[in-house]
Length: 211
Image 1 (spheres, helix red, strand yellow):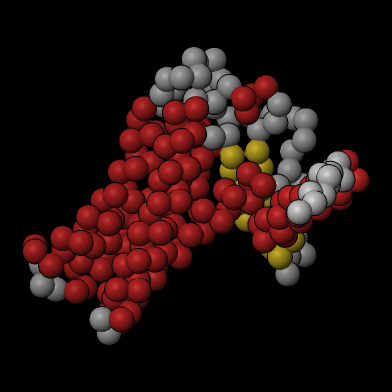
Image 2 (spheres, rainbow, N blue to C red):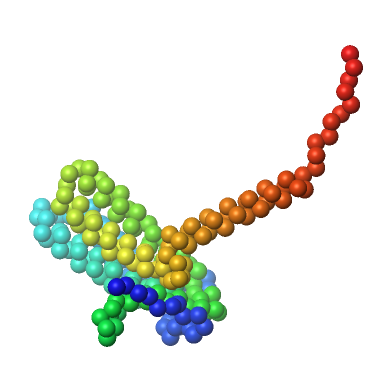
């Protein structure tokens, strides 16, 4: 049974240094590897037909690159670039616990905004690309490559989901958080409409003209 632990509220996580200027790349090598493995896996998928006709060799290369990308983002780039991390552990009673953590307070505000944009852009864009490639492979009845794309989509989507949970918080699911935001907007609009009904001046009628 899956369970979760609360996000850290006051105690900053002990990873990463936060003394660099905000506008610069504080971790250029980490940022490079954040893009390198997933871009390499995508290029390997697109170009494998030009270099090899064997499916097994291409499958192994792509899966290895995807696994390296998953591990790097989950364990390194997330905590250094945006101050987020997530993992799973099994307690002594055999129950599975998911942990989603985020730096709080001033530490979170001192991350490099450039790295934050790069991190989230790559985290969101690549699952979208893999989703499109999955549909192409599926409608082309190329089931072997559809399986490869499904693996890529699962790994990249897992990191996206984990970091969204870190960003949005643990108490509500992502769907519930979106529903709460939408509900708040609807309530605000309704209150605005009601206020306008009572504050709107009644229409004035001009003097009737006689013929």
